[in-house]
Image 1 (cartoon, rainbow, N blue to C red):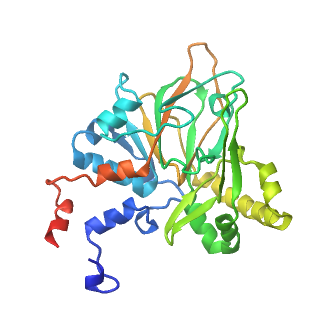
Image 2: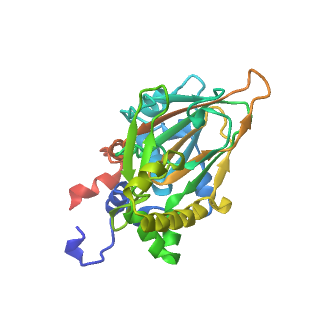
Image 3: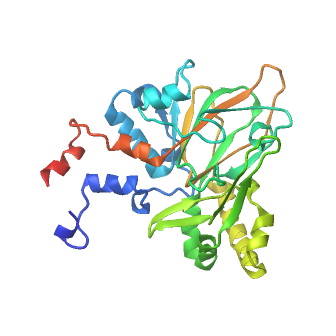
Length: 313
């Protein structure tokens, strides 16, 4: 279609949507500072009312890397929302099973189940194929504190490409080791990734889980000069990511649901306190492959002319 009309034809709506589902930066909206579009709360009953609403909601997610749902009935769980409401399946099973309830435990092996602040990170960096889509369903939140916050890594990468392209090149070319071997579990997960992966000229993937970075293995397989340059680059990059002006912070309430792009948007949590036995913070989490969401967005719908354009060419 493009080749027939010269080097720079006007894209059809279908082509723009396809570019978005391919994760092309040209169709994504980076947010250095969160705005009303990033923080928009979508009503669950409206989103699942018909396929057009669902498609608009999921397209918003792909564009900004994050989207929020509110008004989920108390009796509905993760599977109800994703599979029955949004009509997407299957969820991806990991070492944390298909759906994991992140609930406070005293002295946990995994810091995510504790009450301390949880640093900005992307999940499961110790998988070679890190999950694309991540779901968070707030089941209960009656503790003091525990606000969640998010940041768009692509905005930081874009700024780095303009100000320090030499350091960005290091993050794109020097792999580091991530390892997850919680004691007493029999689990051993280890991979090598670059922090910034170029999947195309304008298709990016960020991989970064600092508390699973295996410094010993990095030292073993990387020379001193390269390690020094990598730490310089990584420190500069994390300085951008950790800048509070880039963060969107929100206290999740019961019945709220968040979907993040785990190849792009970092998530974190403030410290919280339980001041009474009945207080708790319970968040269900799960993952899905990108292609499942793409299939949902591009599913045939004869009521929407965007999908009839193909038949007209």
